[in-house]
Image: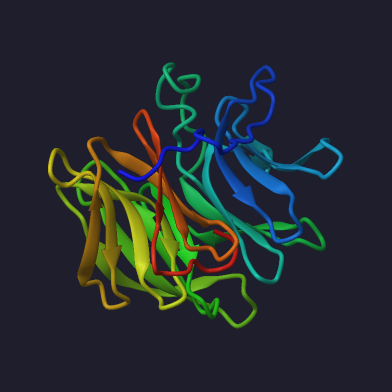
Length: 251
């Protein structure tokens, strides 16, 4: 395990306002922060002056079930998965009935219009874009078969098409994922002792590397001046490791 964040480093978190427990943070190219809020079940953006802009909290009048992961594409649009983590139980959110399917959405940066980008998964989770923005990998974490699929991004950058299997992680599962500049996919991975940590898959789905941790790993992000520092959020730790790979711009 590499040096832990906090020893000479800093971790920036938004203020714990009521109902605004942050779940995932994503630095946008302009330097703003996009946050998947668990308790409030919404996607927000923290502006440079500290104010908060609500990007999404409803779809056609119904509340989102809880944005789980978000990525800002090179064209400025924001994609996010909504998978029910905020309504499944009172430990992490507020248990309530589901009003709509779990989906992946896209928000236009110019108009703010939100559309459904993907609706063929049971529980969409982490996702990432390829270096050329033409492919998107999306994790599905239902109760049975847990897979990562790859989709073609339509020419208008809105819809995802031609989904096919990339990785079947069952009986374990991948969670947050990020792509490096070679097209390899780095995945937070959980499957018990001796397998928990990070798994790295080539574009064809072959596992080519692992970083073993003493606890489950949820999300991974590339950071640092050269995007070659891997941040791993494990069950009770934030682990940091310098790697030779360079992450795709945006984390």
